[in-house]
Length: 442
Ligand code: SF4
Ligand code: SF4
Image: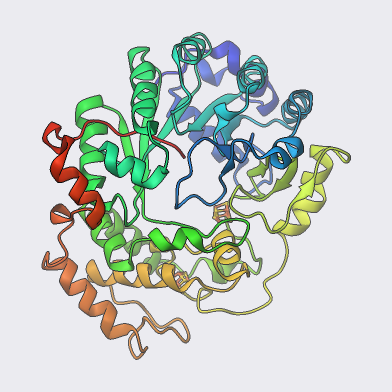
């Protein structure tokens, strides 16, 4: 994609000292160039702003949705003016990429006002939405003020599955309408899904819908987290490790990509061994998050330690509290430190704190998934401490058996059907239509 809206980014380009490059560069080259220039330096280039935790859907797997009518949540949210002030500060800090997420961003009546202010400040903005509140007016407005990217999460390829997960009748049609309105206007749409036990049988159909019918990018994630209020309820619809990996390997280039990642890991020293800090990612280094209540954290998932920004200001919190958090030393040597398959694994401090209440403590589910990915692609995992999924561990045989079942297609994602009650509905209603649509939420 060629970046045409030079005026939108002039301000940030100026601050980044790379003015002049944009005339010739594609966006990809520009982004890579900027990251290269900042590499090794701590600089806040990207920020995720959660505008609300309220959402019109009631998805079983969601980690942070609150009811639309939650007055306590509404009253704690940042005001429009606080958002404006924050955007002014982000400009001063040299921030470049902005992600607006929720909850559902359009649940806030003033969202377009906030968004417009951000657009006028020159940020490259990505929107995460479930799409169900997008109407003609919003779609027209986004056409006038286009985002850099807009991502809608599909919950199913059929109404029955979609609404089995969202628990809101009519949400499927509203989401399809949102997708249609954005597509009609040629906005930069991407679709994605979170695979759960409710919709796993429609992941392939969702991919086909996105890529073949709409011609837009699609991705899926098998990761379901506990809620940030510590409730474990979303785990009731989480896939098993075997199902996650079977879906991974069924994706186009799935096997090749995991082989590439594993090769790179095995050729290099363990990533975590090079660090002695709890956090080892870009969170707190080149990015951070602001939650709906005006608190800064490493990312939207890692919410155990957050810092109010209203009084001290963003810059000070970034330079003091968040720096302290980002440079906090590890307190223990876990099996992750010497692990050589880290790129196959989703374990990180945010997932540790959500699932175990401890940033450093390995999440067994993720460890299982990573070892199973390695086994399926034929990678022997080098010893990395006491690990029940490695050779000699009490789960090792189960990992090998699952890998065999996936490789031999005994676990065949293409033959999956939905939960019993969903399947019955499909049998006697609109299944004959092939189930059109999907839709999103995030
Ligand atoms: S989700 Fe994990 S890896 Fe990503 S920014 Fe948060 S702590 Fe870092
Ligand atoms: S959780 Fe397991 S697979 Fe993941 S990094 Fe830690 S040791 Fe490795």
